[in-house]
Figure 1 (cartoon, rainbow, N blue to C red):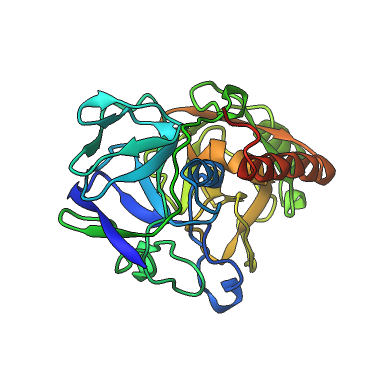
Figure 2 (tube, helix red, strand yellow):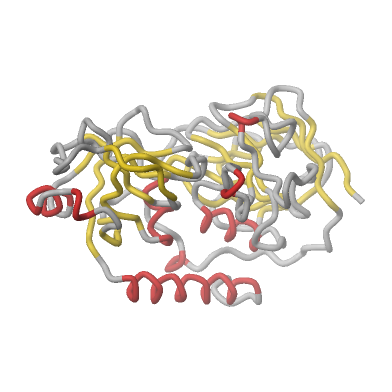
Length: 317
């Protein structure tokens, strides 16, 4: 059973419904899509009393204005875009009780790019191939396969009564405002580059360009040189694959990435650092650090254990 809880009063820059995407269909050419920052989506859902993969509202930079037509519970994670309820700032990473006729809006972005509004019970739209994630280029998932627009009505499923107010422990809140290195696994096409380019990639600073989007983060910096050209026979790409086309400027593939690619792959960003990459604003810097597969697995396991503990109330207060 679901009920209408939200009316979209203003759409914002790019506001969509996302979950963790639709894996398992890439061999058919179906893009995975899903949240750009999957950690923030999952945490916001847990705070709102939902399962981790519940559909929520993804907001990019300039947030929407949402009117609530029923009492509900929300939680906002990810980028701090100055959320306000009836004009008063509300905290991030905390369960917030919202009354009928209240209005959620956003102000000046403080850090990060993508925020997630989780609503108790989740956003109820028909699943497509097991996911409610929006992929706008194919008009798939979400609400009619598109970004939200003024006048849209959003439903949520009935949820158990949530009376306890709690928030995420500070040590679990990700930091998007300070520069740090994104960890990568070098390869699989490292032999296509000369040693100087590999060393440059791991030592130089790259800048995220305004041409970045949900498909990939385009970078600008020292040109990387391939030995025999940038083109390869089309091969599988992964979340975080870093392609280097003929201009020598890296592209980090993100949520709406294609299923295969024909450019050399210098490295892959490890899974838990993809959120940091996605939350890097155009004009900000990115640097890279090489780690082993074993290290990438170790930190992934740590994050997964943290998320599972959150589901039973550890890590909140």
